[in-house]
Amino acid sequence: MKKISIILAAILLSVGASAQELKEGYIENAPQHEAYTPSFKYDGSTRKVRNVILLIGDGTGLAQISAGLYSNGGSLTVTNLRNIGLVKTQAADAYTTDSAASGTAYSTGHKTHNYAVGVDVDDKALDNIPEICQRYGIISGIISTDNLNGATPACFFAHQPNRGMTDEIWADLPASSLTFFAAGSEEQMEGRPQETQDAINKVFTVVSELPEDASGIERLGYLPPKKETQSFKYGRGDFLPATTKYAIDFLSARTNRRKGFFMMVEGARIDKSCHANEYEPAVREMLDFDQAIEQAIRFAEADGHTLVLISADHETGGLSLAADGDPAKGNTHGRFATGGHTPIPVPIFAYGPGAQYFRGIQENSEVAQKILWLLTGSTHQ
Image (cartoon, rainbow, N blue to C red):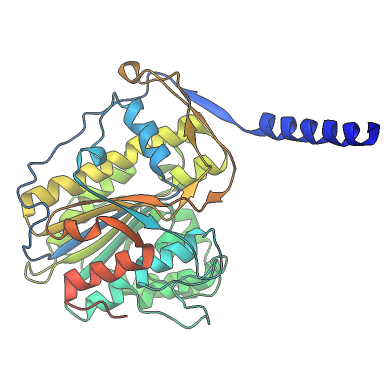
């Protein structure tokens, strides 16, 4: 009996220690912005979809969105939308995905193994959305607050069996189908082999500051200093919303309106903040991501032939919200259950023609198949 009691005490101490390890955080007087509400004139219509803007909030589950919502006074642009579904994120080889496997599902329409970038379960290259769209005269761009070789942006131009193959991922860029890219960083580019840098510069006009007049540039790469894409903890400015607007204008000016464009925008540092269980930075990243969403929604509203999708590659941190928030003051309190990813389905919000096809529960790979069907008339499975 004494032995059993000792064992039970040890278990209780272990549980208590685990509970104490769970991290929590607060944000007070969050920097609020006015949420945008569109007219919904063409939302869910059967009008031709010429452009698709896919915004991926890395690590962003319903709790992360809710944290942003209540920290912003109870309203976000993304939560003002009407067409909502859920996305299952499992990898081909794992119950809980990493960003590479889920990014590949979103970029190619195929499930693959964790760590894979644009390749299938046998490490054979898969056609990605920009490559397929190029065959139809549709141009593409990508934006991320991560480094360009980060798992999610890399999945839209590279084909490598492991996300850690940094030099190989950068070396895939010159042969990509991208017309525009923006991510971190100038320093990352300078760290690559000279032959890779030369090859990239031969194909793209690479800048560290966006030009006011880009009319003479066919393919543009924006790699600012790393301070411009790092976490809000270290003073990042409006890189994501400002670059999203710039890229929309850049791509729009270079496409026949009957052909269109595809663009992927990643709010990468929501995930990184949640991995570190840093609640306030995670909320600030979510609020910034919502302002990038606003730029896409405003364009779709004016254009009438643009579909905007907002989702995530997975949830990170097992975040929950405590009961002591005050939306009017921008105060919320969050608790993390883990420092890793979770298999919880993530929301998907849709706005514009074709938005109705993203209601209900779907696989992340199905999202890509639907995008290709709406843009090209085929899923290319």
